[in-house]
Amino acid sequence: MPSSNTLQIAVLPGDGIGVEVMEPCLALLKAVEAKVGGFALSPATYPAGAAHYRDTGIALPKATMAACGKADAILLAAMGLPSVRYPNGTEIAPQLDLRMDLALYAGVRPVRTLPGLPTVLCDPRAGNLDFVLIRESTEGLFASRAKGTVVNDVCATETLVLTRKTSERLFDFGFKLAAQRKARGRPGRLTLVDKANVFTSFAWARTIFAERASAFPAIAHDFAYVDATALDMVRRPWTFDVLVTENMFGDILSDLGAGLMGGMGMAPSADIGDENAVFQPCHGTAPDIVGQGKANPTAMFLSAAMMLDWLGDRHREPKLNVAAAMIEAAVSTAYVTNKLKPFELGGQSGTAEITRAVLAAVAVA
Ligand code: ATP
Image 1: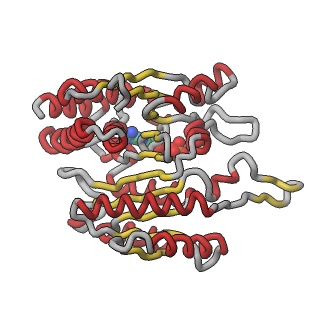
Image 2: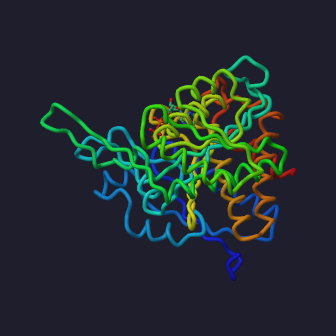
Image 3: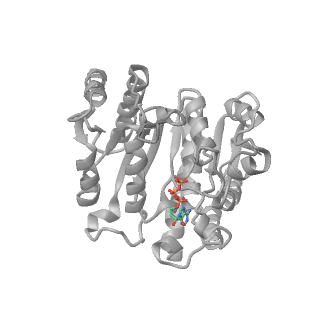
């Protein structure tokens, strides 16, 4: 822990439902901080996003970026509005700039189903999913962002980039995560998901993966093609442990993972680098439901839990890990006790009801 014992949290609510789920999340963090004790969070809110770009011409102000770089952790809700775009037609996405600028290469997307909720797959094992998708978040096809070309209106190109440096640290991160999970009774297996049967870059990355695997002999490793993985995420997702994949593949597969959990509002995530990390639900700004009280804050809450857990490990302060576990347990308890069913799962539980139930579960924890 820093000498002041207070951790600085840069808070970026962003746009759309981002603002709606961030507010209850800060209330939840305050509640667990008071309940567990032994640590202090100092959240400070900064502007960034599509609305800020519309109003000022700047999507990610320098002062916001500087504060994020200095903060102990960054808590981000969602950014972007389909109606606000750069002159080239692409959406405003400062969250992607943050990932690139802070080298947050490991996008951690846990896929865990909550007890008591209907599952989208009918096999009973789908109610017990627990695997993690790691999406490389700084290169891959996204390295071409804002660099693509359209030549004479007849041809367009984007270039996929993989580097040895990022691949090595990404794979090491994956092996360490698989080892941590193995210590908690999970299988301890890391699967590289790619398209190495077609593309040179992925065939090369397999050799790096195999090199790194030799440093982690206790962890099993294997390979899978991305198309087959999409099939197996529907056919037998309970067989996965930790998957690691390229940026664009991870972007797509993580939405499929969110679907297995019941919807975007259930899926938390973290983008982790060697020095900084952003914690953010997988969902976007959901303009179709904004202002209706229907936004599910669960993914935001679980992302905040991931933040506390990461801070706890980083600062060797177990109280933070306890607070993280308290949020996870409170979310599970709230769903079971109150028979919550969010709108996106066909129910009637909105932001306020889910927040009340989770805060009540913390109060009696
Ligand atoms: P982006 O491209 O910015 O990641 P997206 O295309 O994934 O966004 P979302 O904004 O995540 O789109 O919305 C996808 C669908 O999921 C929409 O129908 C939206 O209403 C729904 N959705 C997303 N997040 C939530 C949430 N927290 N609660 C309820 N529904 C949500």
